[in-house]
Amino acid sequence: MQVQHTVIDRVEQVADDVVSLVLRGATGPLEPWEPGAHVDLTLPNWLTRSYSLCGDPADRERYRVAVRLDPLSRGGSEYIHHYLRQGRALDVSPPRNHFPLLPAPEYLFLAGGIGVTPLLPMLSAAVDADVPATFVYVGRSASTMPFADELRARHGDRVRLVATSRDHRPDLAALAADLAPGALVYCCGPAPMLSAAQAAFPAERLHTERFRPAARTFAPNTAFEAVCARSGGTVQVGADQSLLDALARAGRPVMSGCREGVCGSCELTVLSGTPEHRDDIGAPTGRMYACVSRALTPELRLDI
Image (cartoon, rainbow, N blue to C red; front, side):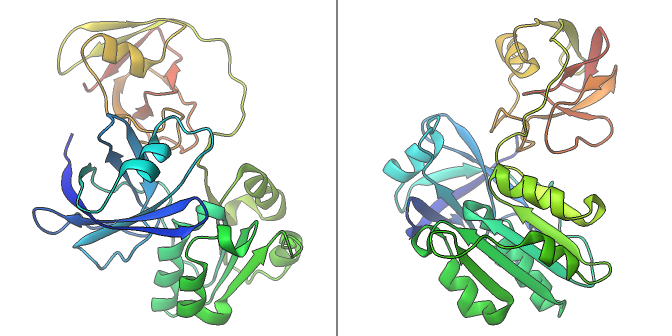
């Protein structure tokens, strides 16, 4: 896997239980990115985790991400909060973008908690392009809302901060009624917020990103074969294991991050056979995500 070598330039507490990491390229300019992109951080404890880029896309020297300490951490956010310090070297993947900002005559951005991160550069891009934009940012209290002061300082009246410990939750139906023709809505936040947005806004105008997969039901798992076209050989994938794990046990490990079908780091090219997509991203034609997706045919031929 291609990696970029970076050094932690700054670690900053930006809200209760949220730290921001500024990563400086160690060997030259970093790969370019656009609003909505994320990167994988390879942590010193051997875990890989994906985070949205929330800095300035024009800054090729630095990336910025923000990480909330998850009380149910599987070792990623906990390690970042307790052990990462300025000067530490980190390998970072090139940016990937499954949540791009599409052209529109107007935007409504809905952020919930740490879901603000991919939307920050989107608002800046809209303002720089002189496109009308409204930013509604919801959190439990001001102290739990990372980058709230930055948003207010840079964008003023375009930003509406909603602290649910004090304010009523935003009326999404009223916001939907006020949408201009052709306006697009971008939403990132906890599952209840995404569900409310899906109920309020037309599907063709709403774009969402999840940090956790939506609850869905699939047919029972069945075993299948993964033919490794480049390396040769066939890997048996049992009904009780993922394609990702089966490949790793066969000595063909694939880069992975979330292991839940929301980050896209384990993308594989499918040369033949029909995958059963179980991700929350929407795999492009001819691709699949090995952490959760399976096969609808007895065999998948993969470019690995």
